[in-house]
Length: 503
Image 1 (tube, helix red, strand yellow):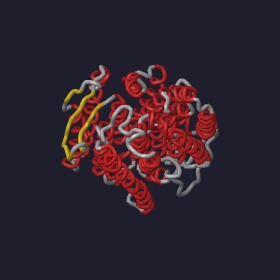
Image 2 (tube, helix red, strand yellow):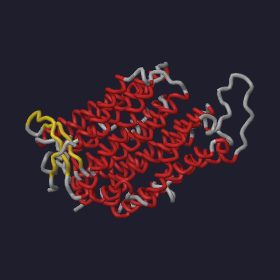
Image 3 (tube, one colour):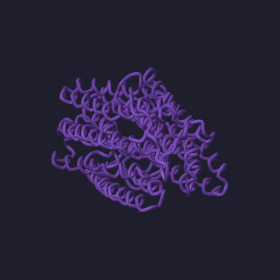
Image 4 (cartoon, helix red, strand yellow):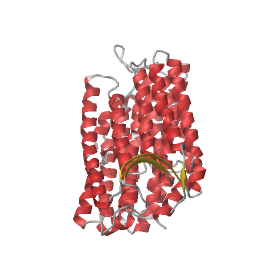
């Protein structure tokens, strides 16, 4: 049993985005102060969260109790190694997306900017609350809060396309919430607790195999935020949102909360031994493999850049589910570190897509011929993200995919090794044409009239630096993580988490 430290640090980390949301509303008529509050809160939250890493690495856990509803039913926070990985990722990327948002929202003169920053802060509050959740009850509350806080972010443009996307968004995710609620209730009825526990809170003696498999199915359906196929179509539809929101959905909060929660369920509710006994790892691996391959094929057929990136996300998220399904120490470790590594690489790609849109007006890959010559920093950063997605060095995706490959060998499911290599090849197939078009194709002549596509460059306006600098930083970190995977304590935290799951 790890030593427990009662501390207000988790509450303090959550107080910054929550208090920030209130200040954003209060200073809604003073944009400079409003955005300044966002940046200060983001930096402060990250500082508090990273300060907990040395304590956790000593083998301790940090808890903050909120309220006891009944015996075994509590709302509270518990910071462990795995949760801290997700929290560090979300809080650090909030800083960069906040800087990026200033350039993006002002350059496009977007409406409802106060609402945008307000909801963004609440989304980060919910995401970090999920990371620190001590049990399924707390997890469920903030899992649903995340859905509601991101509604107006997806619907930001308030046109018919945006509202159609949000209807699909809510249809999937709110329906998913009912399945998750049923799973939480059923877990409590079977065990009398909902607390996340290393090795799981369920066992073969808890209920019949059929009942436990039904419970796992409810949890799986309650995890549609992970965008596993066939419950994925809400994610490409949500690409109507502003690009910083797409970054939030894909790299920082929503889908990351989905896969993070799924790994929690596999390792801290069911446990590796029970998953193996019921054959659930093989079933989950099959679903993840299908999603990895088919998601890539969908990406190949997309000309819209953001939608291609969305299908890429669906495929890449499945790597995390895939790693958990292997039920081996290397596989689960690969899943855990792919959460931050994918976050940095994917946010780089989306920030680049947003910069291209703002600076040139281009949304489609077929329109991007020669754009790398006018936006070299942006497209070099995009190339770095693309190389990482394919799992090639010297980008972080190589490290996480390497562990996933080791996990397949360790688990004995060698057929899954073919799946990883095939999916990585497909990553090359749908990313390489973008890089080739941007750097090696000659730009086509623009139409004379009513053509929204225009020539632009990164140096055209100082405001563009607010976009170019963050995407440069995320691209640099994507490389740094390959050579120094222990940056931000990521690898050490993953090793500690694995040590508790595979003693």
